[in-house]
Image (tube, rainbow over the protein chains, first blue to last red):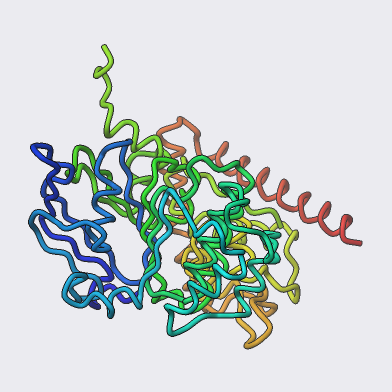
Length: 248
Length: 136
């Protein structure tokens, strides 16, 4: 694996303050290209703020962020052309159909894999003539995933992508990330997943960071962590954030 | 061939796959000449990273268990191991050494250990017999 290359993501000492609250408080994160990286934390741990700072959807208070060695603020276009993002709350223009929405998203992209688009539309059973406003939450997430994968980005960022979805849609979602997204050049297809539904992504994650109150608590390779603790990643997550006796 | 991952066992996922393919081959549920599942379908089915499956297959190939035929996929090797007899003996001796140490700590003496080894060989034989009946 290309671990000695420029990291896909390199976050150093990231701080983001809202008023007097530090949502992110000196966070570090390094993700090598080709990795599938889990960002684990409870609700409010700072996962979404970190991702928004990473994608320049939110200004950082201090610290340094690099994507493929580039600054997402100064090199915004170059960075955005290589990444795609599925947020937890997906919204589209309600008056557009599924077909319009795909064309709209494709118009921003240099590359767009039409065959993959057709395959995934069929696989998810989406109707191209359907208005975006009539899609269910699961269908909106599926459409967002298609919009994220068809440009064949080097980095796919997923922020709580499956929360609130039924188990069948969740499975299909993960299958698509493994199958369709990783299919191109696995060494270059990097995934960052923020989630607290850890067991869903257990097999996909090869390295993870647990964060709490905006800080790193534990960073480890998944296999090594399981070897050391003889527990699933979810159990490791729980026992890391809630040491025995904390409830007593 | 049924592959299953146990995330609690502490064994790296790719090694679990390696062990299970080797068991399937030894017990006759995987036949030479039949293609192993492709990396993508297997990764999707098990919901594991493709790199994990690729790593398992690479390991199986380096151990001489499977071979990759360009454009056709991965197959169980017909000719058996790539390695010379003394190398194979050495690899197995290391595994047996570990089992002998376990036996010591479990108060299993040499005679019982050897009886148990016989039993396990027979169990695998029976599995093979059942597998060949099933496929006949």
